[in-house]
Amino acid sequence: MELIAKLINQGKTLVDGIEKLYDRIKGSASILLMKDDGIYAARDRLGRTPLVVGEGEGGDYVVATETCSFLNLGYRIAKYLEPGEIVRLGNAGLEEQLSGRTSDQICAFLWIYTGYPASSYEGINVELVRERSGRFLAKNDNVDADFVAGVPDSGVGHAIGYAMESGLPYRRPLVKYTPGYGRSYTPPAQEIRDLVATMKLIPIKEVIAGNRIVLCDDSIVRGTQLKNYTLKKLGESGAKEVHVRPACPPLLFPCRFALSTRSVDELVARRAIRALEGCEIEDMRDYLDDRSEKYRKMVEWIAKELGVTTLAYQRIDDMVEAIGLPREKLCLHCWTGEDGQSGKTRGATNPSRRRGRCKAC
Image (tube, rainbow, N blue to C red; front, side):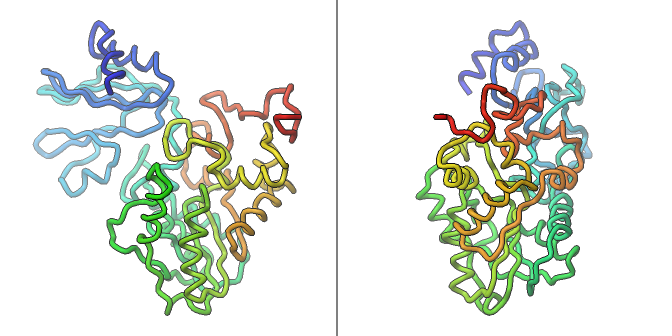
């Protein structure tokens, strides 16, 4: 915050200072600033995160990233800010200070995992995206099972969509310890993640025992919590089979903007590739192609590591279609390595890097 304030102070005006800030930083930052003439709201120039203005019946305004925060307070959505757009909320109402861009790359993970089901980003509701995502998972599947389940909470919408498309019943073999229990993925320390994961879910043995379960989850990042807690609880409760269906492709690259995954070593897909190749490779194209033999072997390795009956990931094109935005408007870096508006995939376009070879070769 201190760095951001110092960069903004270099501008001739507040708006000029925010522009200078966005010229300097490589990261993503949306800003709310209070000044004597009102509140200034600025959405980050990259458009990675949303920023929405809500308007009340009395003409008052609120700003949030989550549109669901407006509903119970009696506000309606007044404006989705464009990337780089700056507005002022004051006595004169909502005033644009700087026009935004039409190009952006909003984080696709908002709809798949991190977003709240009642929220909409770019006018697209999270829960409906997850239902469409689950339908795609079911369309590409032919597994025999007794019922479909979702890992609470973000896997539930995907599972409901899967159930609607497949005709299998939706059931709840796992419930949260309390409805408001925190996410186990986000704490920075592994021991805290483990503690949250241990306490978070309670298995219902009477629902689980003897059944073949399709288990939908938002994603598999490290794989440790899914294996050591969720799947372990299902196995100990007598599940006959567990077929895991993540709602996004394998995560191959750590996020450049968040702290949750800082290293490729944390990603189970990269551990699989390293085990198969014998070293860390530069070119990931074969592992991005869900029709390739290397992709199939990577998924088989992860399935064996997790101890599941079968494992099948969402296809990237289906995930994009479920969201409903053009591919170029989504940040897909975690899955494809694509950097920014160029759409270039890291390690896939440099001719000096030999396909499928390790860094030491």
